[in-house]
Length: 204
Image (spheres, helix red, strand yellow):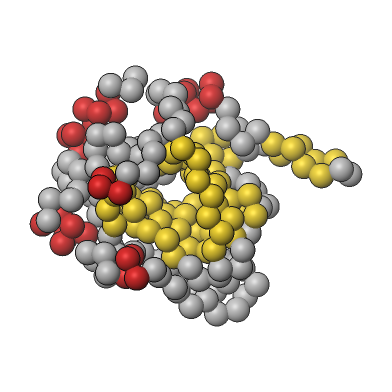
């Protein structure tokens, strides 16, 4: 299992080693010692979620108040998604920047986003299944969103599905109505970089 830190500090791409034979494939989806070595603390699992999306569905950008926020370890056991991490930490050197990882049922990678980061993905084929291991349970009063199509972020969402056909993006009404990054900042919704770092220090 290999961890590669993304351009947004606090997020990692995880590539498992796969073992195949005529029966199929086996891999380790999560390994605590490798996780702790890369991230610096254990994953305190509080909730596991699963979503199934049609091609073109965009979910996010979602985040939660710090503390405790909600770290996410995300995989795609079936189908394919472009998974995106956004730095929404006010005062961060990479504030407003994003990075992405292709999650699919071929390489079977995962992505880990630590507390205080924004998360979104776009499904690249029908019935793409995403599983999230979360460090905190869902709490509506602490959950927020940013419009994933906000021009100031400039996220390069895919235009082609996995089968080569044109991809039409589909958002929920809630995500479509979400504020831009600047609007969310002006509304006081975004976590500060210093507050996030202070909270992460308590997890060491």
